[in-house]
Amino acid sequence: MPRTFAAFRSGQLNEWRTTLVVKETACLTVEDRMAVDEELAADTGALDGAGDRAIINAVRAAAYRRDPRSVARRAAHAVTERTVSLRPAPDAMTYLTALLPVAQGVAAYAALVREADGARAGGDERTRGQVMADTLVERVTGTRAGITGIDLQVVMTDRALFQGDSEPARIPGYGIIPAETARTLLFNTERIGTEVQDRQDLALWIRRLYTTPETGELVAMDSRARLFPAGLKRFLQVRDDTCRTPYCDAPIRHHDHILGWAHGGTTTAGNGQGLCEACNHTKETPGWSAKPLRLPGLGHTVQTRTPTGHTYHSTAPPLPGALRRTAAATSRRQRKQTPAAQPGPALA
Image (cartoon, rainbow, N blue to C red; front, side, top):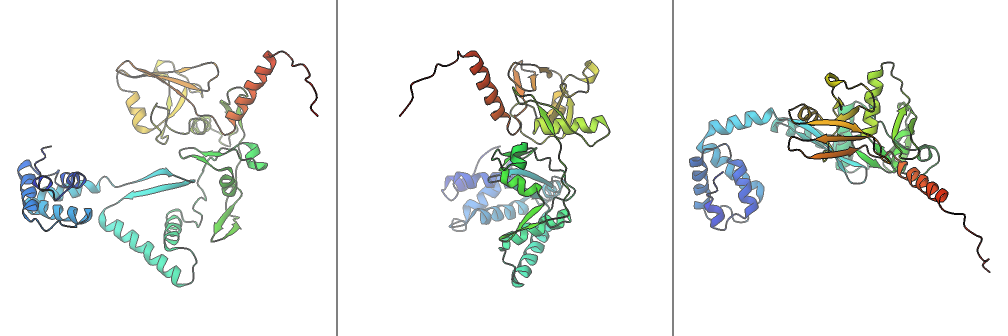
């Protein structure tokens, strides 16, 4: 894209703000972009002390004056890209982000603000932001805590669940959470203000996961489902956690045959992997291939070969407690291979 910004050359805009201008005029022709640039650069005092939002608004207005039809088409297309995304945040939190048309986004935010202001006026001790967040969860899920009917699939050791061990737990698709947070979640409690209250409307189901003592690899699990495909999908979801394609940690959306069914691949845990939608579609294009491997000392491993001829290995992440068991097993093997130690002198 040509960069002919006199505003940048004249010192009114730094490089970051010039990038904002480029984005806002991307739908215009080269001639119209140059005209917008000249219009902004001509008024030397208009942008003094202006923030990013003011600059963006000025550019949008100038772009609309040059070619209103292109700007309108761009806005109409943007509506089709509305979506909701989830990504991890520090301290067992998440960022829930919604990309919405301006009217819907403003209306939703205004409704949350109105609810928060009313609650605060009525004596609610939560902060305004806390009330807004809690109201959002309640209205989306239909419940106050927001998890009734949702299968979280929290994975943790029996010691962490029943004996207060500090081994962290894992939520597939999110990652590691503290053991105490997982216990609070599973034992039907919720924190309201400074008090922790029991909740009776949450059902807790426990499935046993069976792992090998040497590597911690998941090899079997209990299932409440009658149909094998549903149980197998759940198995892959727990074992793989996120997309198994190297360097991709997107949530699992597809349950894939590593060696395709058409090529003799079986519907088994060993020949299955969890992939995101994009990686599963990419894997089917010419030049891509994958096969399961059995490597000593490693869990379930997949070898992926790309059209460029590069080969990558992906190993299922260890379950909570697996590293501790693996270290203990290694220590036992070392003791077996080491001659018995002779008694040493007593210490006074």
